[in-house]
Image (cartoon, rainbow, N blue to C red; front, side):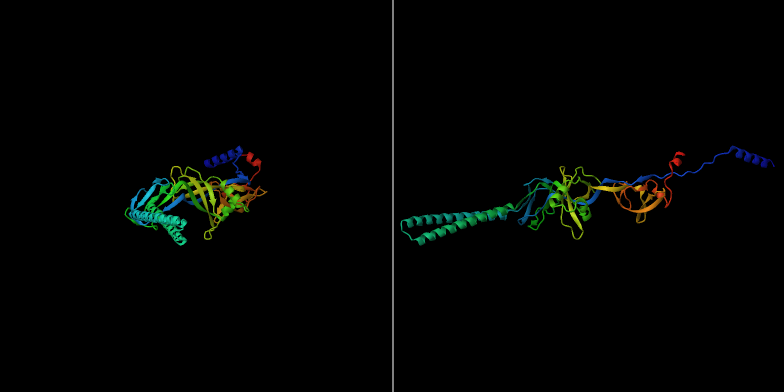
Amino acid sequence: MKTFKWTLMLSVALASCEVDMPQQKDSSFETMVVETTDIELPNKFSARMKGQNDVTVTPQASGQLMKICVTEGQQVRVGQTLFIIDSRNARLELDAANANLQAAQAQANSAKLEYESNKNLFDKKIVSSYMLNNSLNSYKQAQAAVAQAQAAVNRARVELGFCTISAAVSGMIGEIPVRVGDQVSPMTQLTILSGNTTMFAEFSVTEAIVEAMVKEGMNIDQVNSYISKLPEASFIMKNGTVYPHKGRVVSLTGVVNAATGSLTCKVSFPNPEGHLYSGIQGSVLMPFKEKDVIVIPQYAVVRLQDKSQVFKVKADSTATAVDVTVEDTGNGKDFIVTSGLKKGDKIVANGANNVTEGQKVLFPEEAKSEK
């Protein structure tokens, strides 16, 4: 009986106080109006470095390799001796050629004396014109023999010079697969000399990228001028290190590879410290400008398996899902919308993943002010 009395009194007290219970109020979602803008997109391409003048060093004479004058990775200058081949046979050939030249010169001198003597006698009408002409022909033949002997001497000197192999360009010595004592011939590769004061990163680009870079109807001079004005590129090593010097596009082949449907692009990088080597691989990062494109934040896009959607805000403040086609900008924050939206559309930005079809996403300002 006592418990019932206390319960009745508590009920009366609560009724008389008129306590306001909290009410749930809806809030607006964050929205944005779609606009067009210009954006710079970083494009990354797998590339391989090549020296400005990569020269394959092979001998022009056959013989035993007597001396290797350089080491792998060594920097050399133009004209510096790299390899020496056994030159004994070449020297003997030169000596023999010199001896033949001396004999030919002596024969020519004798023929000259005989011709001059016969000419003097002919002038005195002592010998006939037949003898004079014969001596003249002998003298000319002797002169020709001297010229042949001189050519043989020059050829022997060249062959002797082939025994000393010098650097055709300044650069860095690559791998040396031969050893002293090896028999070498013109078919033997001694090393590759990379002219590495300037390096080229070569990579393939698709026709679509080329079409985006180069406007249709440009002649070759306009294309070259356009390429020269492209923004600078960066080279990223395989370990992620960014090479400190920037490069520039210097060429773009005009022939499409039929197998890959791509073209070869070449970017020139200065290499003053010699840190870049021919053959190393990495990535070229090139920025390309896109004009008048729709850019929206990635969090405004809802991914549904193979589809991308955004929620467009209708006039009655409700949201409707719209399929869009997007491209990654590479900055980790935004997408470029290539289809599905137009300038002036209003979409749900932050919180798009929590919106359902037909849900009201905007509420009157009065409702906001009451909070």
